[in-house]
Image (cartoon, rainbow, N blue to C red; front, side, top):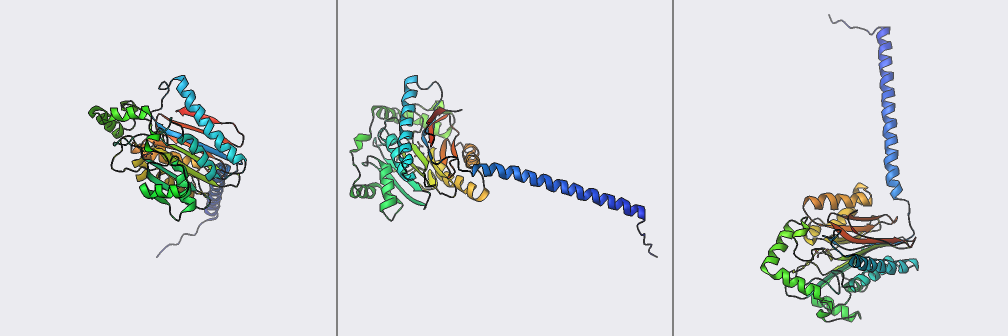
Length: 370
Ligand code: ASP
């Protein structure tokens, strides 16, 4: 016979006591979970409070830019040029201009300066010419314009903007792109306009057997910057801006990599790799070893982490630049802004020429780590 044991009163009391304990433990856990949730959502909510009415952030390339490398005068020269670019964008934004307008103007200043690897002073190809790439993207409508292999347009960023605004296309290259530039009334120059003595020397050294070998070693071991024979910093320029209308945009301009061959095109004019903007997430401009930025679709990857995983701009940029790229020895960095005015400047190299300015009107510039 099966004996059914009925719970006694004392068993009942014990069980009741236990379930009360269980319930209170559960309530405690739920309360903790709720509180933790509040803390977490507060921290990302903080990111979603408009910090500034407008603002912009720039870079002038990343690479082996370490303290002691530049003289005080050289440092000053770089910082002044970065400040000039920031002020140019600030004036446009302050007067109600749009973010693509500010991006174009800022990049003009940097393209016209021989200090950077864009426009005048860009690096040379193995054929000892200059071939330029540029891109711009408007985060308010996902419109974009990009150009590659440009030899005669004084300001490639303006060509990119004209492609975005006046053509039904996103990307134009080489002679066709230059024909479009002429038809759009852009200023054309001889290829020699872009040459500087420094770049001519640089390409000569790199083209020696030893220089080529050093460059190869440098690129294979991107982080051992001191192995690079001559300049070694990348020097591309870029800008991301938020305007008073709440729209963001970004743009990038470059001569690419020194001694490039065979019509090589880097990440800059590849939308999603070196340049990307979307009001929903962020506007990004990258600089670094382009092949890594293309393979990892860096700029869009940062945007996707924000869109699909709710990461903040800083978290998303660090995830891609400091973890993913670094894991592959992909040297470089990004700058970016979101529609709330959060700004990021993340890089895994020794330094990155960089700066930002907001509606407060005080420019910040820096070159080295920390
Ligand atoms: N990302 C550029 C390229 O690979 C180089 C640079 O940033 O300076 O073309």
